[in-house]
Length: 94
Image (cartoon, rainbow, N blue to C red):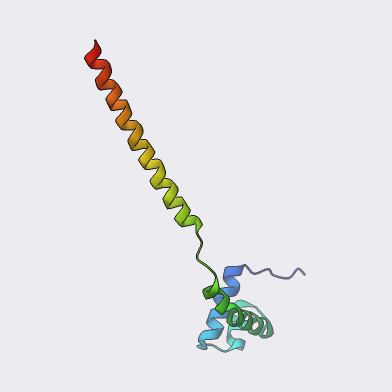
């Protein structure tokens, strides 16, 4: 019989429930079909690595995306002004 694979989100959810302490590991084990030892390992892993989540620098890709959008909007605005100017110029020549 193949072992059941749990997604990262399922592991995190079970570990968080274990940390809350509203249910015992045995209750969580019977509810999710996971051995109590495994639940305790996930709980310990979450607690040990929680500090690292706050030590990481924020992702700059979102800020770079915003800056790129601003730059492109400025360029579009500039080009629109040039098009309007050329239309006006060509209309006055004829």
